[in-house]
Length: 281
Image: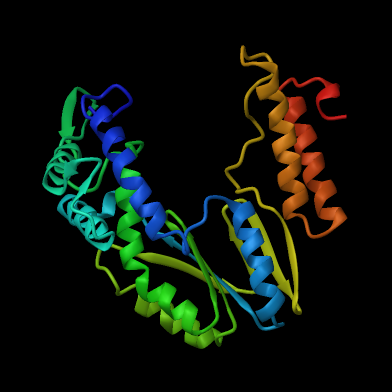
């Protein structure tokens, strides 16, 4: 069964420990880890290239984890190692890594209404190896996009299955390019949004006549609940929650009003989770 206690989870973690550093080194210039990192890159790019006509393009990959064929995932690992020009990692030969990865990918099962099912496409959600394979697969798919961004002085980054672009290329051309990029790989379907505003990860950003306006973004499904104050976790962990939220608000907010709106949201969330006043006053 796919899960934290499944027979394959230890192999998955071990393989992920071997392969993820390869991906991180290879994709360092086109991937981000969080919204704060993206804000920094946007500010650096905008200082040189931002105009009143600059557009944002956000693209989401539909069902990335389940759209990649299992054998395609194994081929991705081979390509990852070939691109890194290595035949073994920590003394483990490529053939053994591929064999173990195939075993993990093709042995995912789940139980529903009294019946057992075997997953025949994609990888198990939550499996460490699945994330690395999906990331590596997208790295090779996105090569034409990242090269185009360099040529056109556009900004391009990706977080797993979410793609972000800032560009001064005409909107009609961008629309045509998105259609072309949707044909790069039969397994990858991109749903795109192009305009002067964008909602990406936890960041909302707008190009208002050549000036960047940004604030924290909360999805419609967002709920103001996190670690309750009544939990048994250490006090320093609980203190870090409002601290991290306020730091994010400061980093994302382009105006004092935007910060105060997010600050009010944080306070309400803390109250809902039974945090005392001295945690945020």
